Length: 394
Ligand SMILES: *Cc1c(COP(=O)(O)O)cnc(C)c1O
Image (cartoon, rainbow, N blue to C red; front, side, top):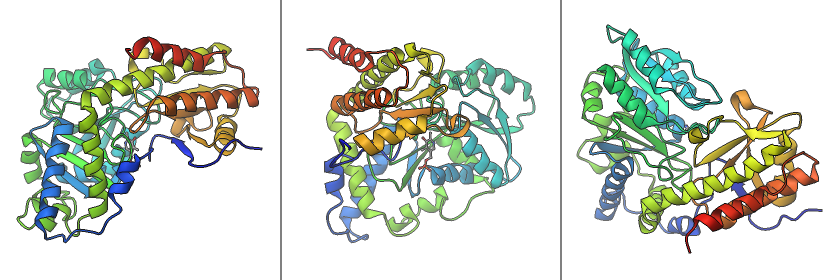
């Protein structure tokens, strides 16, 4: 017996649920890629992406996922043998570092912890030791989608600035752009990257990079440049060079619609919506945790992301819960990955999410916990409902 029918609901941190309007925006013929319409579409998107990153710097669109956008950042500013400092807070900055190592960079990991965010003071201390400025770039994620950590990029940017160290600061916003505030220029970030399929509600397949003037200056001498990723190539006069070939026309239609929807809602409101829905999830998890089996992976409340919550599970199999929710109820939870493989599940609350989706997901998790006899504090979904009732103004 199941109570699933119709559309399966993705509560995984990417790809996320796409609005029907975004899906429909793609249902039309391709554009003549030499037309004025095409040029204008590209220009409007590049301008809006720079606004989303909050930078005066240029943005670039790649036909790639987040891994591709990582490579784009590395190839444009690093040379073989350059040293890069990776700020660990889970899985994803480590992955960026692995790509850099494979490309010929020397990679040092500033040891972090899967249970907490990056400590700005530790970054500052490490940079102060680097007296001859051998570190050329520092990379961090704003949200680590595996651990659920939210890193205070502003504080890390300030700490870097305080040391006077010239390394480029590069930030991954794949799991946060459009969902949580990000201010590239104000926070001292030189290069930022993101992807289409998480907070930006667009199909997988587009990677975004923004670079400021400091990064553009380093780019001129970078030795790892290759034609596809190269920023200079993409500045060429012919329009096709913006994509190093044929434009991904339909994905661009989708992205245009998704950004228009964000504009219509208001970016600040989208951030607030994520804060409220994220907190609703946390209220539920806090109550479930009273059963001593479930718990927050991230120990400090202010280091938990508004886009994904990683819930640890002791002595029971999170995959069984995940399977139940998917196969019986049509809600797909994220699994634990990396160090948390087999020990956690994840609830995504990023992008096109609203109260029924979140309350429905929490309700289904509770159905699963009950059905599988996994001990948990009673009334988690009720706590989420109460929180929203008190905080979403009349
Ligand atoms: C998903 C994700 C990535 C990787 O993106 P892909 O599109 O899967 O290559 C990188 N960084 C973060 C923070 C992510 O959440």
